[in-house]
Image (tube, rainbow, N blue to C red; front, side, top):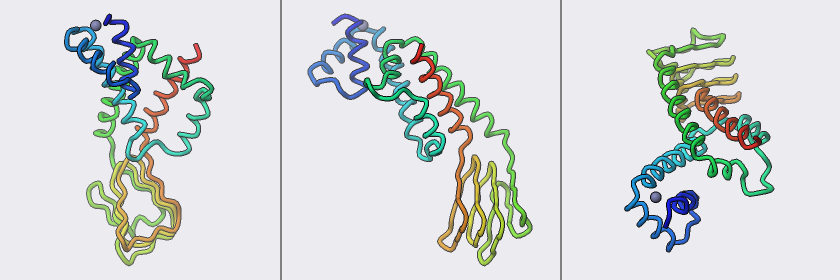
Length: 204
Ligand SMILES: [Zn+2]
C-alpha cells in the first residue's frame, strides 16, 4: 500500500466505514510507516476534538445551533465541508491548532472570572464564596442572573434564572416558575467559530 492510499483509508476508518479487510491493511501500513502513523494520530485528535465539541454535555444552545445549521451548506451531496476537510489536511491541522489555542484561552478566562450576581432581591440570597443560594422557604419574585459561579436553588423563584459560565443545582424542594437558562459563553463561542470556519472555507 502506498501512503496516498493509506491517507484516504484513514479518513474512511475515522468515519467508521472502512471494511475489515482494508482496516487490517491500513494497520499493517501504519506499523511500517512512521509518517503515516504520525498523520493518523493527528487526524484522530482532530476527529476526537470535533466529536467532543459537537457532543459537549451541555451542548451549544439551541438557538445557536439553529443559526449554524442555517449557515451550513444543505446536504445535497454528502456533507461538502467534511469532504473539503478530508482533501485539505494541512488546513485542518491549522484548524486543530486554532482549537487548542482557543481552549487554552478559555481556561485562562475562567481563572480570571469573578462571581457576578444580578437581581432585584439580592438581600434574600445567601452568597458563600462562588456559590449563590436561594434558601429553602424563601421566595424570590424577580429574575436572578448568576455569572461565573454556582447557583443552588432550595426555595422558590418566580422569575427567570440564568446561569452564565457556571453550575446550576436545583434541590427537590426548588421551584422555578420562569425560564431556566444555562449558558456557556465560551463553548458557544468556540462552536460558532469552528463551524463558521468550516462553512466559510467550504465555499471557496
Ligand atoms: Zn505511509
